[in-house]
Image 1 (spheres, rainbow, N blue to C red):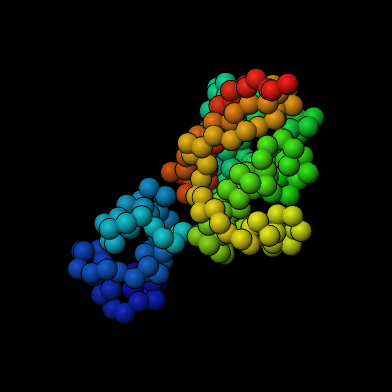
Image 2 (cartoon, rainbow, N blue to C red; image 1 turned 45 degrees about the vertical axis):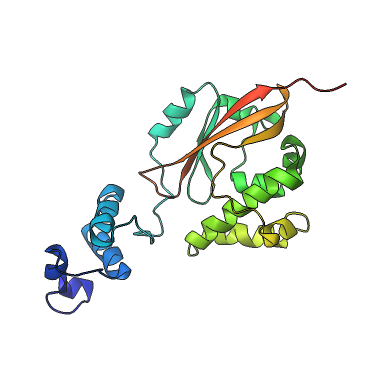
Length: 223
């Protein structure tokens, strides 16, 4: 094992017996890759070895592969629901979520749509002051956490180059990590103006991937 891990003799034996205090992060990553650990096993190893969840993904692909059963979960949800991978690419969604978009065409990437699409600026009410700063903060934090992800790197570059979203992104006033528990005004093409109550969670099987449920409450408009 030491040879495969390119470590000094008896390193893995000490690690396996719990005799290696505060093992380096790169060793934990190497062990996870060599043993082909599952996400649960990898997280458990970190918890026992360093007392916290992984700060480094086992492979660049972690968070980019979401279990297919999430589509069935979306289909069974009456509220708008969608699932994205680590880079905000939509991998599952239901019909109510598709109804939010023009012609029912769900965007490939929700961050790109929310920050760069003209349609988003009218659908997401108070876009410049509420939606955009929050999404920009979430994207910045995701890229800081996963700087080697090429999809996030491309998104970072696209948003920075945009004349409208770029300054909001660069300003960095919103420290948002996820939209869980927040309420935002939304102009739904079928249901009208209302309040979007956001529910968000991470996926254990795909760290960094997210499931979002949007509970929509129509509101009366002032004449």
